[in-house]
Length: 168
Image (cartoon, rainbow, N blue to C red; front, side, top):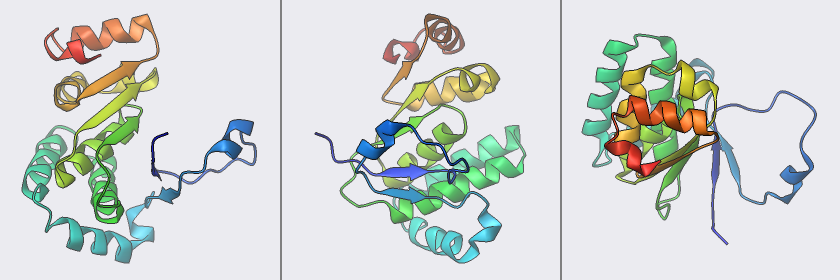
């Protein structure tokens, strides 16, 4: 019963799909996987997003993150968040990231830009390979999260130092 929109960080590459995919009627928007392939879209996203009230806070957070994780991937995450914030419908009331690592970063920055709450689902790789500082901050800022296993929950609770983990 929820009206949703799907923003994907990547286009599908395989030819096989699960039969459940045929039941999904939500529109799908593919964010630029590689920013250099869609420079005008990224520039327009920045042009629109920089006028949003949360732009300063999101940019400052991204710069702090970039100082700890200086990588092209970190730059791509912020660029995708700019496009996400610029292209999402104004009536969206929250963002949810399916995976806490890269999708969580894009949702986090996008939520900051738009002034929206955000949530996440964490699974496996994202729980164990994301730096602890990043997990801790994302858990603290997200409104809530869900985890796929007891081991994953224990890991996130330990990383979050118990306080914010009550959201899990």
